[in-house]
Length: 180
Image 1 (cartoon, helix red, strand yellow):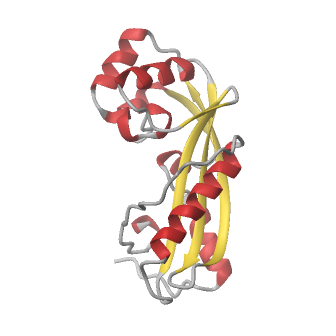
Image 2 (tube, rainbow, N blue to C red):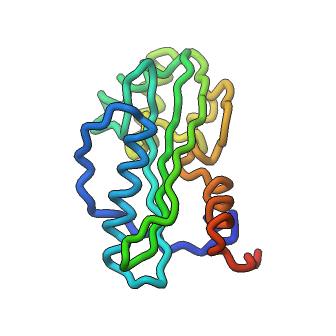
C-alpha cells in the first residue's frame, strides 16, 4: 500500500474464518468482508478499513496456508509443472458503521516450472512457505520456479494494489497522494 502512496496501519483480524464456500472468487471476497467488518468494528467512522484474503486454486482444489511442513510439500507437488490461479478478495469498509464501500476479486494465473522432490523439500525447509497461500511466496525464493504469470503480480503477493487504488479513486475518497 505504501507503493501507491497510502500509509496503512496493519491490523490482523481475529475473525473466525470458517466458511463452506467452494468457489475461490466468492470465498476470498467473503473472507475479506468478514475480516474488514471485524476490524471496522474497532474504529470510528473516519477510518477506512481494507480487508483482503488470498487463496491458490489448482485443478479445482483450493489451497490456503499449509498447516505443517508435510502439507506444504503436498501443495507444492500439486503446483509444480502446472498452471494455477491466485485469487484475492478485497473489501473496503467505513470504520464504525461497517458500511461496505467496495468489494472485488482479482485473479492471476501462475505457471510453475517442474520441480523435483528435493527442490520442494529444500524450499519448504527454508520456512518461507509456511504462512503463504499455496505454500509459496512469489516475491521470495520461490521466484526461481515461476515460469510466467498472467495478471497482476501484486495480486500473487497478496494485495492487488493497482486495482485497490483505482477502486478508491472511483469512490472519490482519495485525496491528492504525496509521494515522499
